Each structure stands twice: as structure tokens, then as C-alpha cells.
Length: 235
Image 1: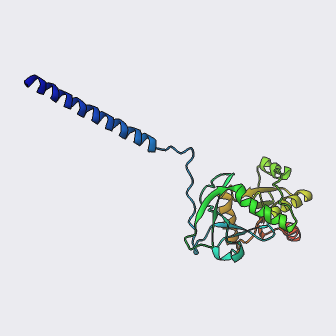
Image 2: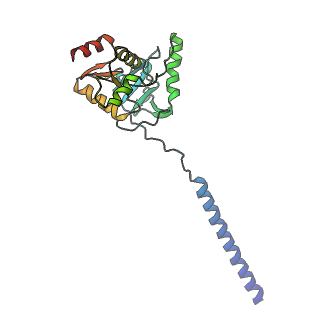
Image 3: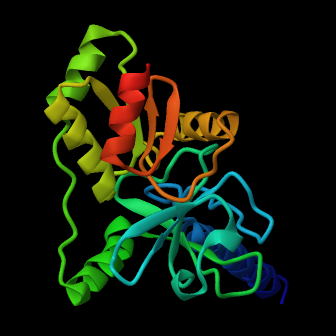
């Protein structure tokens, strides 16, 4: 009976080895299956509360026009469902994505990352109802390119965004007058957004709409052709 018992013991040890090997292989397979390597890391969303300051909050009115505020309380009740939020102290998530916040919820308000077109489609739909069309951003003007090429400080700096109709009107007015200028997209250039806010604070002004124009040191909020012309003549 000794020989069969030894053979049986070896068989049992073999079964245990095979079982341990299978368990190890299964554990490795599960670990590999659960490990995900994201194609692109999602940027950290800004934190939005009632007391938040220094953020750029873009809301859309019933005509499809965009407005920019720097405090949550300044956003009207009827336009708080989808508000674009930009933190000038952080890099933007890219040209094709943006953060939006629902200011109807309880703070801290929920922020999500969406395709930029999803936000802009809201404005397009409202403009269609109002009988107007959302204008696309024109190519960079020759005046802006010329100022950059010359390397000196231009007479006018326009702080705006690609979707901002009055920003394009300001650029067209300056180009028509032959005034050199540069344009900064505050949603894509965090340094420009911080620079704009610093100028507003220094001038004792606050945001509320764009463009913000620096006309030879005079800070103008919104586009008013007559105000721009007066600022150009006074400096």
C-alpha cells in the first residue's frame, strides 16, 4: 500500500500546484482587464460656489447673445441652466471643449465638461427663434497681424472671445479707421484673461460684457464706436 499512497500524494500536490497557478493567472487577467489607460486626462473642473470670484461666467439671453459676469449673483435667474465657466488661473480644456455649470442647483454647483458646440447650439437655437443668425468668428485681421509683426504696443487691445459679435464689430471698426490693434481670446488665453481682470480692477470697473477694450490706457467695457473714437482722440 506504500507505493499507491506515495503516488496519490504526488497527485494531490500536482493538483494543488495547478490550482494555485490557475488562480494566479486569473488574478493577473482581472488586474489587466480593470486597468484603463485614458487616451486624454480630463482637466480639473473649476469649483463654483455662491462666493466664487475671479471666474468668467458666460450666460446666454433669450436673443442668443452672450454676456460675461464675474460673480454668480450677476447671472440672471432665467439664464442659469447652462453657464459656461472659465477659470483664468487654469489652462482651458481646449478649443473644442468647455466647462458648463448649472446655477439652479445647490452649491457647490455641478460643473461638467461638454463639447463647445453643445453650449453654442443653445445660442444658435435662441437666435433662430429671435430671427437672427449667430455669426462665425472672422479670420484674424490684417491690423492685428501687422501689430504683432511690428512688435510694439498697439493703440488698442481687444479682450474678447470667438463667439462674441460685438468683439468682431470692434475689430471691424478699428480696421476701417486704420487703427492698429490686437485681439486676445480670454477663454483660450488664461494670461490674457488675468491681464484683462487686472486692468478692470485698476480702472475701478467690473466685467459684465465683452469686449473689454484697452484704448491707449482707457478701459472700455462693451463696444461703443463713439466711445472708442473719443478715447482715441483724447490720448
